[in-house]
Amino acid sequence: MSIVVTVESAPSREIAASWAALVQRAAGNVFADPAALRAAEATSFSRPRTLLAWAERDGAPTLVGAWSFSTRRLLPCCAILTAPAYKYAFAGTPVLDPHASDAATAAFLDAIVADRTLPKVLRLKDVDADSSGFAALMRLDKRQSRHRTACGTREQCARRHPLGHLG
Image (cartoon, rainbow, N blue to C red):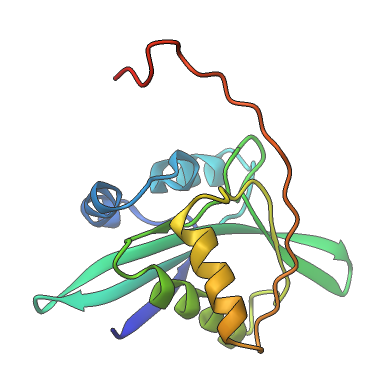
């Protein structure tokens, strides 16, 4: 599968239909929704950088992944990419089509390496360890020595409704 990654600030309204189609196929992340990213940028919470992974399906470009970051400057000469992309976002998990998660994750990391404007160090917070994105990142780390992942986990409490999932 050939994937092309574009790097944008907050994604434009033009990808709304592509985003809606992606979250029908993939586990969503409301904090990575293009509208939320535009609001974060407009209110100066963040200057998000969003990686969009596109694959050709049935002769048309199809969005198969989205991952948002912000740039955080540690020192005048040292910056890192952080996810979640803005303050008050509580999930930094990429949104990935389950049929393209490994290829999209590899394409995201390759795009970061190739883009001279992006820092090469990632700090990923609040990435769901049960997500396809986290699993793809761990599989990629085992296969390729050029990307190195240091991973720590923490427990999170979840309050469950006694009747199970309602909705």
